[in-house]
Image (cartoon, rainbow, N blue to C red):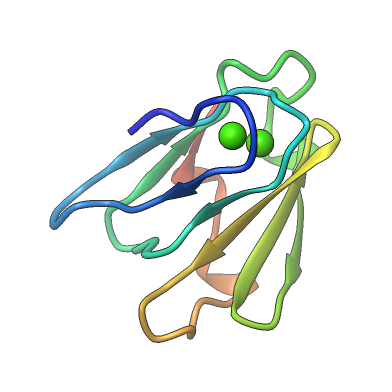
Length: 93
Ligand SMILES: [Ca+2]
Ligand SMILES: [Ca+2]
């Protein structure tokens, strides 16, 4: 699943998804992130190279990740995602 330029809403499918993001300066949304098996790929971000480069904060319906000057919003179907649900294992840099 690859993000495009501009603000996008990405929906995963059943089973494991890899969400690949491009650095477009716009907030993007994953509407059904499942921390059990979905993963996020930041390899196309020039200034994000480790988990320490991410700022993860709780949002009203999920978790917001600030990376490379833009936000990525992760939501789950039940809006129950929390900061502690995410670790370095969820990301590729
Ligand atoms: Ca985008
Ligand atoms: Ca973006």
